[in-house]
Image (cartoon, rainbow over all chains, first blue to last red; front, side, top):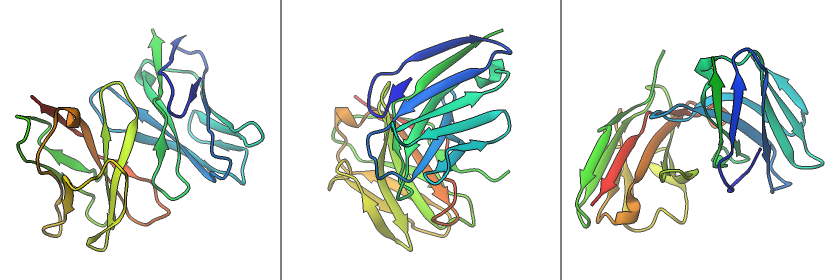
Length: 110
Length: 113
């Protein structure tokens, strides 16, 4: 997993597996969190967000879980595909100016 | 699907030179942002812009930086006297309203020699 501001870990999975990318945040007052995907040579792309009054939110093949007690959120990608290979960032964005972590590199092997 | 565009995709300049990075936000968006990402590091906020003025800026956005919306479509970032450490990817982003998702452009890679 990653912590906002720390090193860039890598997660390698096989195509079809589920992927879980973790993120820890430090600001207990943060009330809005976003997951971005960044493919090589491209800008960050919004995946899913969650507000602090929720602990789970689902999108298409993605689920974000928020645990405010331990200041942790995760991104779950179901049935991971080669096109999911990218760097995934979590960001805190209480004022809609997100503070990004360095990201986790997801590598999907066919 | 509408998208944010940025030009050039890659800019190479000599230290001390001025550069202007250009962005065309999505046409009905009202809030505009610049971020930078030094190679291998996290994306960092530089500045936000609304109603023709800067809303917020980070410590990175010093007097060497300026932003402008010269017409109804372009949003520019100017670096007056580039330094080696300005080498990075610069991303523009825009949103329609303050509660909406940010859409990022593809970035401009700035290389300062």
